[in-house]
Length: 288
Ligand SMILES: Nc1ncnc2c1ncn2[C@@H]1O[C@H](COP(=O)(O)OP(=O)(O)OP(=O)(O)O)[C@@H](O)[C@H]1O
Ligand SMILES: [Mg+2]
Image (tube, rainbow, N blue to C red; front, side, top):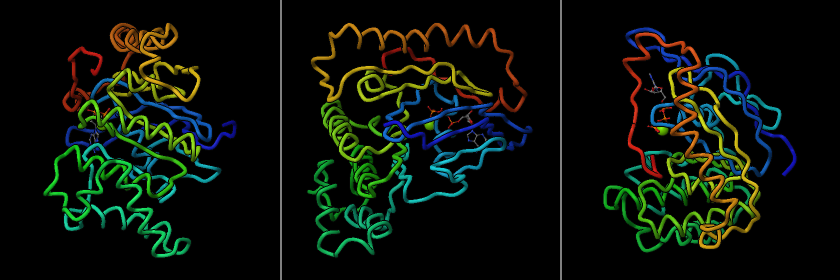
């Protein structure tokens, strides 16, 4: 986990809106090492999905850019699998076929047919969705569809896994199981993960690093917190671990205190369009 492989430099993202240019991100700089598990955390509308979409190659930064293993990212690629915030499955394909499509794309030439079938089955089992393999997205719940999205992404064995609130729609037990699976898989494959979450405990439990973003418009990296907790991590054992508790408090402090100070210090490049299009979530809980 030493090689630098993903780098965002001076990333600005300005969207054209009917009221003019809206600067969502301003000068985002991030250096991420191979195998690092990075969480992005910040208030609703600050620009987390926009950062993820730039790394996915779905959006092109208006200034600066993103380099992966020496190559500039300007389009999507199978080495960067995305679990979308709104699960985004193909509605006309079954659960199995949705995963199959991704597996075909990546492993058509390197895996035999039987091997591919076993691999699809394995990934569906991992997210407890094998029983619904023949259902279509319209016939399953949002949480189930989210799990299929996770299976599809993992089945691609991506070098970079991009996850936009992957566990948000799941019940507590399923979420805990999938978080544990994700930690195991990531340890095995040493893939780089960038995960957006609104859950402070999830961020501390899973991450090597938590990037806390300032509120938009013109959002930037407010704080970069390294989580120095040994792996494998056990949620029950960590619950009362003083280091874990301290990290958790640091994140909460940023979100509810420092964030406000940063907002009042930093003059924002706000404009009318920005004010009109920024939406804030002010609910204060451990999931914020
Ligand atoms: N295509 C677009 N055109 C105009 N504005 C956009 C566009 N996409 C995003 N924005 C704006 O950019 C800002 C950041 O949006 P983004 O979706 O990245 O936020 P987020 O941090 O992921 O929020 P959430 O936690 O609610 O998912 C928001 O103010 C949003 O309104
Ligand atoms: Mg988002």
